[in-house]
Picture 1 (spheres, rainbow, N blue to C red):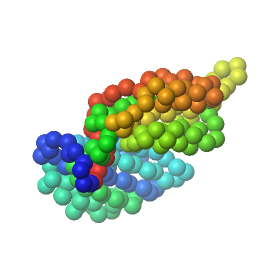
Picture 2 (spheres, rainbow, N blue to C red):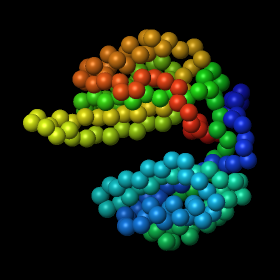
Picture 3 (cartoon, rainbow, N blue to C red):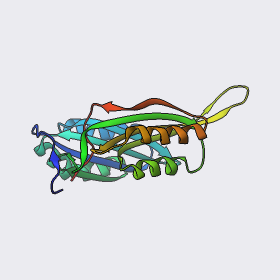
Amino acid sequence: MTGSTPYVDNGLQHAALWLVGPDMPGLLNLGATFVAERGGNIDKDIADKFGENAVIFMSITASPADIARMNEDKMLLRDKSGCNVKFQPMSQPTVPPGYQELLHGMDIVTEDAVGLIAAMTKLFAEHGVFVVGHTGERRVVPGPRPRVEFGQKYVVMLPREFDRYEFTRQVNEQVKRHNGTIKTPLQAVPGLLWWWT
């Protein structure tokens, strides 16, 4: 990306690994072992089950030579797991022009509602906020009158020109509309930038 600011190159490269296919005991271990045996470190992983199928995602850091070896060996993982395997080497993370270098995070919990993620991300887009990570999960809170809550975690990049007060006011308004709270307000968070060129 022209004009982007690269992070300091520490001699490591990044890659993403996906496994999608029939679930079975030990599937996550197969993926983790594949990475570890080839010198990779798993920075982030997500594993979930949908019916009979599993979806596993791993974000990996390793030397360029080890990343190349994983890429060459990915069919071995496919044969062992019975899953579709995608392995994607990545370039060095960068900060797009016009954005602050620090990542910021926010956690909210609200009552569940159709269209809630769409409403929240619309606000982010209107303020030029760049979402680089999002997780959301519904849960049933037991009690005399069980209720369904939806928790969301956002990791974002903020534009250099950013009206924090107005953004926070509008997010609060949206959250209160769904009887929720901001568990963690918008604040700087340490970590790697998941923006790849």
